[in-house]
Image 1: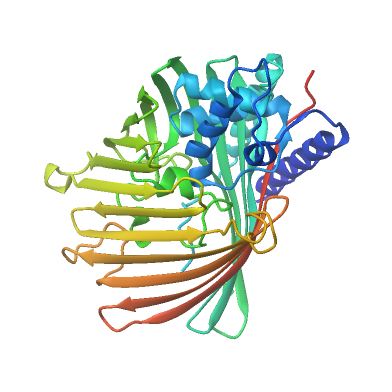
Image 2 (image 1 turned 45 degrees about the horizontal axis):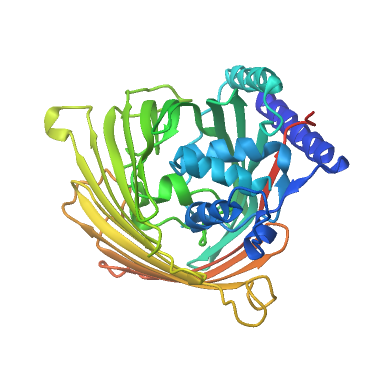
Length: 101
Length: 354
């Protein structure tokens, strides 16, 4: 019981510290919610609207659009979604570009 | 009736070993690319359920950690921390607490069409277990009545999976999943020997997905090896926020289906206006017993249930879930179920990156 409580405490502290650390810095944030509403292709970019389509056709089918997250984890998010949603390699790359225009 | 939560997998001091393993993996992931910092995601919620005049409370947290090791390997795990507070039958309340890993798996992206998964994984049968079971995703607190069919009573397998996108075209795409699970009596990774898979066809222009699932229990005497069949259809018309999801499952002793529809209006300023954040929904479901051998988690008698829900999607990944359900049982055990809850979804990097 003590060990379980200790582990729960460790996880809680880790979560809180990681959360506060993430909030202290202000990295560029991927904002799929905003981008999904306003998907204007930027000259020179490789069809960012393809990534938006991939997002709408896969991620949004199961869950609501996240309002934003750190661009530092965009690659991890895409890897996770690639496995969970069985995305093709091309779709995963388009999704990564969508998160990092 | 609460949403079905799996029994805790970790209850022994060996849990410390898993924490050490996870932190070791995080350390190993330190050298990842700039966009591949390990993340912590998941949901937390406070849910209430009133049925038969009794109210229960369920604070819950389901953190998920995903740590890439290079560009081809991903380690991911989801835990569940639940505190159930319920009437003790003597005018007071009792409580129970559980913490365990829901799954812990390693993913190897072997080729553009193949991902190999090893470890303890969610059994890929139908759609609910893999897609909708997280507390922050599900529109209703309770899972469908048939959600236990095909999940071998544990919901998780211990072994390997091959999955990926078989074909991806602009007009259609096909993805597949096949798995084998060994038998395990380990408390942390309890699993039954089984094998099966799922095949999905998705038509992007119609926004229609149809899929078939099959798996087979492979332990016990051969006569007890049960087959499970599943089919699902999801339709989400383009440029609307209407979603129609349905699923059918058939086991050796019971079968059933559920159909769920939800909608958010784009009128009155879009889905992010105060009106557009409302999400009315309805789920209809029925189960049918084929015999009285109850081994699948479905109700003992033929049952119908209808759920009417009204969710509100607040900013910052927070949702308020409310629902009224009426359950009709063939033996006359009808009941009303009122549920309310609030859920929060979090997603952040584990540490500061370069």
